[in-house]
Amino acid sequence: MADFILALDQGTTSSRAILFDHQGRPRATAQREFSQHYPRPGWVEHDPEEIWTSQSSVAAEALAQAGAVSADVAAIGITNQRETVLVWERTTGRAIHPAIVWQDRRTAQHIDSLKERGLEDLIQRRTGLVLDAYFSASKLAWILDNVEGARARSRSGELLFGTVDSWLAYRLTGGEHHITDVSNACRTMLFDIDRLEWDDELLAIFDIPRDMLPVVRSSSEVYGEAVLEKGGKPRPLAGIAGDQQAATFGQACFQAGQGKNTYGTGCFMVMNTGARRIESQNRLLSTVAWQQAGAATYALEGSIFIAGAVVQWLRDGLGVIENSAEVEALASTVSDNGGVYLVPAFSGLGAPHWDQYARGAILGLTRGSTKAHLARAALESIAFQVADVVTAMEHDCGSKLSELRVDGGAAHNDLLMQFQADLLGVPVIRPEVVETTALGAAYLAGLAVGFWSDREEIAGQWREEARFEPKLAAAERDVLREDWTRALERSRDWARD
Image (spheres, rainbow, N blue to C red):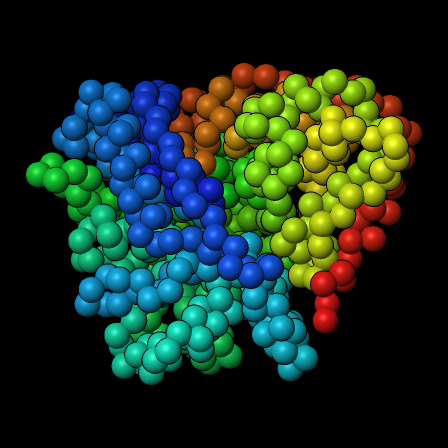
């Protein structure tokens, strides 16, 4: 057996590659940020070729860092930003338009028209998703309607659609495999999550030709052979999962009732609900967590659009900090937010509010407000949004959260993690391996080729690194959340024409 599993973690702002050993420990990591394009307000795009070149280059870099070659890799797993849409030519593999990113809001009016047609309940019942521009279907329809000749070419079989996992798998296998897995397919708004297959009625609603769609596979199986380096030995591509489902697997949340929260560009709370799909009464998403060993596992999810991205905005948009790591030190120079609340609704509000016309707001400013208060308010906005999702999830499940497992880049921020514990009133637990998104993809790939024997072996590798116990009195917590809710309401419905 080879020494490593290679996880390709293609995120919203960067591409990473991590080599994991048999103990589930990262042995080499490479990361590269790539360009974000904002052609109009509310629009977000990526260059498909830059997605590919950044991901392939960090894969090569991770191998070199470990002194390894392709033959040392037992299998490759992919995890990816979800809902982002790419369309490319079947014969050339050339994308016909920039990738439309999950954060993009250009199709909000299309979504409104579907609501006016009374389709919201049907779509939610079939897909488990709230009818929103966040998901892939309306973005795909936009490309077909707005790129010259695309609609006709899609009907003649010339074009292929995929989310980022499909794009990477297609390129890694030299165009041999146009595939996705259930965890990504279920985020397109074109997939029946009970029957686990593309849905003809949904395809008709969005006018999407079935021939464009990738073949749906399980999250852990050998799909084909991938080439990592020129002249290198082809390796099995054996695991695919959307980033949040992969992180849940990486956190070893294998039992119903277990859950995690990932602090990335966005923020995503996922709770395993087992073989049973729970229909949310609080505007959360019912989703497929993964399909492994022939069985599908479901989950409830609360999706927050802007989390770590608010720190990037402080850096790139305002110049308040020079790099993201500075935000904790700056925020720690003040003892509280000074009455300042930042609602980072730059791309609307996700769960449980689902307001695609909400926009960012800063409230409570006085002459005494400083950039430190703004930095603290930015960090606290992440925790407030998570607390809203946890409350909704507790109502759906009928039970209280006992602890929160956390991961993702912003989980390294101790100030944020402590404030999160204070708001929730439960311990927040950070594992030794915080990059559990990549780890989950590695585990899924490794299980498919026997690198790990079973989930029990994987669960035994989960290790706690830090625990944050709540310190805030309940009365203080309630006041903070009430003020947050007031601020949130003032951001609602701002951008509607």
